[in-house]
Length: 137
Ligand SMILES: [Zn+2]
Image (cartoon, rainbow, N blue to C red; front, side, top):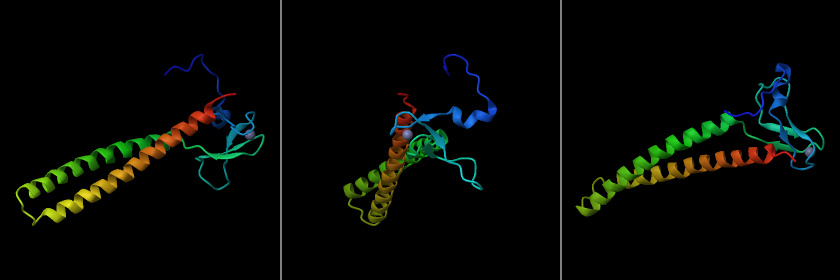
């Protein structure tokens, strides 16, 4: 919650207050690319000096990615372990009747885990990209 000295931000200037800096010319500011008729939100930015364009995901996107990755990942791990223990138990007692179903569910849980891992990866890409563009030269 530390923002240093209190800043006076004009309400009309709200969008450019969250300024990203251009990584190409290192002089320009990344301004949000808004197209007429489109919703206010955009993650496309363009440099006002060299017209370098970049996609910089918003914090809302990143945090929703993190939340869904963590929640979904935890659920997938739970399902994976549950079915893994069932598969191991059926191996142990040599009961093959439910064996293939549990194995299938285990594979599905593993696939979901990979998917949520990818979402998590995307979120960290977004965080690092925000960091790169936030850096002032
Ligand atoms: Zn630039």
